[in-house]
Image 1 (cartoon, rainbow, N blue to C red):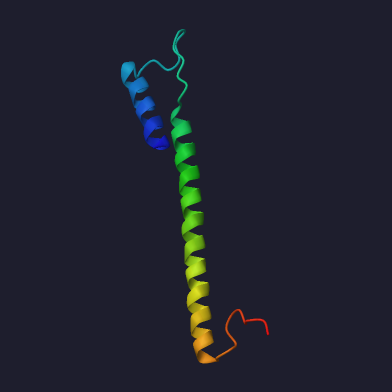
Image 2: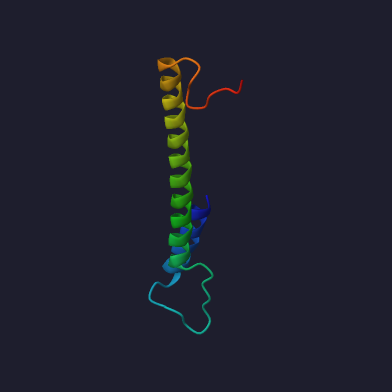
Length: 80
């Protein structure tokens, strides 16, 4: 939603006068760089979340397989 809002603001400001790159009275609070920065941070957060899910899934699968191979001695053995 944030990226969409920034893109919409950027496009509406650019369509008003696309050839005016910073005239005397124009102030554009949203730059194109802002949109890319928000998109980059969103992609980074999503990539970290997906890698965390994959790592947890792999730990679960390895722990289940090692527990089935040797009963009582899984990846995380239970305390006595």
